[in-house]
Image (cartoon, each protein chain N blue to C red):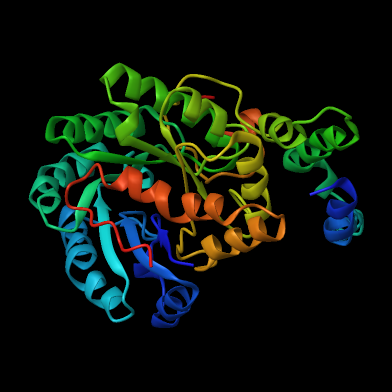
Length: 269
Length: 96
């Protein structure tokens, strides 16, 4: 089974993880810019990170036959620092022009502060001005429901086209909100937070597969790099058709990502 | 899947998770200072657990909502800590 992992923080992962993903059938990853676990001290730190995402990481992925593309931004966790945000937004356009950058992301909210919201709105304005796709991080745990509502309100106010926006880290209480508003929704698979493969399968059964994207996240915390094929196995064990599984792990992410002309749809195999 | 197939496949996993939850509460009772049960997060968890006795579908979403921040306005100051897993009002920041 060939699949995409469209939200995968591979800078956090070892070569062994790339190998495990390739063996499981992964043919492409897209990597959003995110928080490193510590706050960067300057915009130049982000410039180095953007170079890592656009120069080094595609080379590392290619060794395992995996296409690597990415999303760039200042992440929501550091978005509260408005001064840093302005400096990073100033250097962002030159990196967005690079050939493997698919859009602006993962932007969004973390603790739902006014500063975070202002930085989010600045990123959305930049993305709309340039015609970029948008990938959104919704907050964690108890902050997710409120943050998702604030994000949807801000996107509506900005006039964003829901077809070109993917709102990620949805769970049972936010998935309906996101899809009812017309956006693409994402499920990220984690052992303890966000969605387990079993709960993701439950949500697919409950909400259907339209405008739904699943990812392993692969971040520096407790996350399995083979979350997507684990979900595929869960669906297969429940008796779902291979056509549904292929739609979720391959066709859906390709359909969304193809709206960016830089994205190359992998062969289905 | 039929109901019987779901029970056959998932019952032991659900049973183990229920025992883990009970063991967590027992562990808190044995804590040296005896204070864990008063933690707002634990109180929120115990309150949300009432959904397990519900006969209405949508238990997961209702538990998620019960543990979520119910306010609607962005906050002014960044709280000292990250997400705790349960909204506990003033414990999250004075300006909420």
